[in-house]
Amino acid sequence: MTDRPALSLNPGSRGSRVLGLGSFQPEKVVTNDDLSKVMDTNDEWIQSRVGIVERRFAEKDELLTDFAVAAGKAALEDAGVDPSEVDTVILPNCTMPTLIPNAAAQVAARIGIPNPGAFDLNAACAGFCYGLGVASDLVRAGSAKKVLVIGAEKLTDSVNPTDRANAIIFADGAGAAVVGASDEPQIGPVSWGSAGDLVDLIGMTEEKFIYQEGQSVFRWATTQIAPIAMRALEVAGLKPSDVDVLVPHQANLRIVEAIAKKLRANGAREEMVVADDIKYSGNTSSASIPLALDHMRKAGTAKSGDVVLAVGFGAGLSYAGQAFVCP
Image 1 (cartoon, helix red, strand yellow):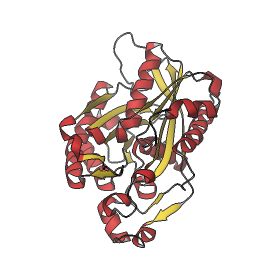
Image 2 (spheres, rainbow, N blue to C red):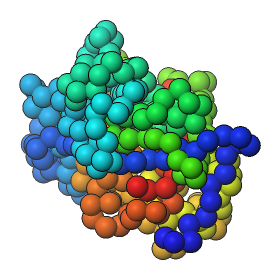
Image 3 (cartoon, one colour):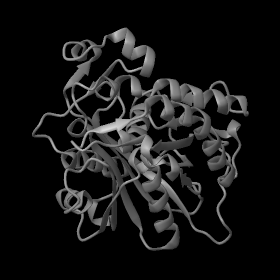
């Protein structure tokens, strides 16, 4: 868009922007019919409840860090940024098998980024928006020049493969963004928060498998996330009608559609493009937003210069959103 509205920041702040995007998914495609062979489910039941047609599962020897390296390299190439230019790596995830060492430092080394500040960030499915917010603020404060943010997950290691409620939803993959300075602000302030009183709705069993109170999470997401998205627009000085592309966390197609419906009821345009990557990628937690947007760019449904509204939400319960310009 040539008449893109200007995002606003606090007085005196420098700007930041997304310079490039990249993504990666494992090759193994798992359909609903495949799942019906190992649990009591079928294609109609899955599509009617969560909207998923297929998803990608990693092999046992594939690692979260492998996905992150591939997505990070793709984002750097897309941005035209050499690894030597990156001074900070942030790796949102919630499925690293060990807390030490973190994923970010080893991924940075494999990509060829010399001696960056590197840390993991765990805000579960809100992780990418948290990471993008931190990266933008680091750049705007002058603490970093170029930041690589990689949301990566291997959720199949954390899901009971016979648990119909969760095994049909979660999948593996990674999505990444490069953030750098900009004379004109192109990433709005992050609007984030948490509902710690609802922390028990999503967690891990003693066997280290993900569980969630599905109906309660669904009700929370369909009522609380649209106002968070609206707040992200407000702090960026934008209106719902300014949004070209809406990318909610790809948790459930019904949740995505409910958020879009509420934004349109508050002034968003009917032609606003809404990410539905959940259909073919499943729920990839912190990877889902950059993965979906990268797929949309490649398909031509999201274009350079579009105003993107991203909003993530998940375990914690944590949530975050921001508006930014598509690279």
